[in-house]
Length: 394
Image (cartoon, rainbow, N blue to C red; front, side, top):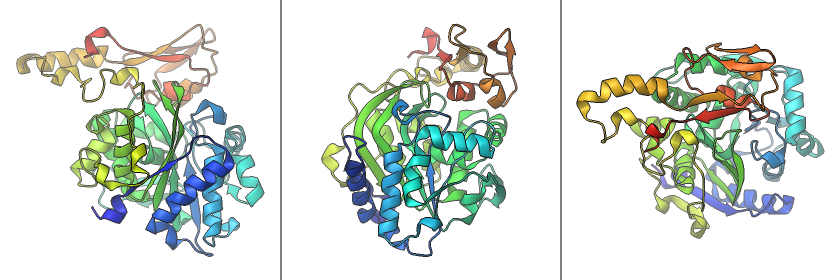
């Protein structure tokens, strides 16, 4: 990998005070050669992580102060406000009403308004063929992706119950419109194949750079059910897989347990682990986050294997039988009936349509569940837990 392309910039940001974020983002822009491509006629897409209707303090979505800082850095390089678009597609129904509500609750509408920057609500989509995709030949993407000259990915630093973590690469799943995401979960229920799909998507969207909002991250059963955890950093790079390797190292998570990073490594897009030699900015800040909690589905610490069927503790002769049992006993979503409000968001997003609403509560049919944890992601009241048997807590 070229040094400039693989560099990961660490920039301290101890709070979401606007001046703090402005300075941190400007330091990243100044260090990345790609930012020099921005000019008066450049059509720029800023792709945050919205996921669902969560306020900024929940640490689920990209903070508006970070988005505002990125807008300011683009304008400082000659970009015109009318050529900058903020756009995402959350996990539920993709329509103007839903998107307006998401931009409002997340604080992005208020962050963009003073600059005259638009939050995209037209909800138009179009196809784009992949360039030599391994498992996908074409994606349906939100229109701003297809029209942009320059894409800046703005993910949140979070854990994820299905993929272990979500950062720069996984955030691009939001370029797929609404409930179309459920179709991809249904088509690729296995984590490894889902990871391959995400890397096909990365190679199709091809962001020019990414800045991870790790001022306050989300630990535990993310990407929505976890807890806020201060990290005090913004991280930037032109190489999204390498940026995510750095995020995994900060979380204390073996990156090869992250399906999309394993797929990226197999294609030669990144190494098997982050190389600190790629750090720029303030490398001394690159220290694993103290006390960071992984998802229940990834317990056991960095390097542990939650795939019990392939653990060294199981003789090869018995692994097929254990794999059969693991499929039925591995971590899976469970409804906390005391918290469930019967809103139906989980049933709406479920790719297998295995969730029903009965007597005002959600019910998950276990036989068809593919453990994509979309229901866990989209529940607005954190009423869907991840249940794990002790057998798999290696």
